[in-house]
Image 1 (cartoon, rainbow, N blue to C red):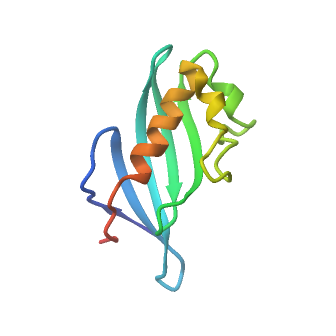
Image 2 (image 1 turned 30 degrees about the vertical axis):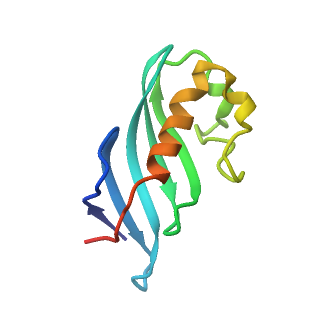
Length: 116
């Protein structure tokens, strides 16, 4: 079950949803986010975070980026999501990674405040 929510941070955020289990317990948030890459323009993503602001998943929906696929699995899922700081930040030395890193940092900084 999910409910669209209003959040206090809107830079790059297209929509945000509070996600609940069948018992009505908050599982986390899903954010529809569009970031910008220095190489290929916009990168559309869905980003999942827990109620205590931990990244649980990032899926790239669309992009025209040259090298961004090196950070994704065969389903378009970000492979660093289960690491404490995401991908090894030394991998962020390329401009391709910037859109993912910037999106993660922006979403983790959001004050969600619950659902509707």
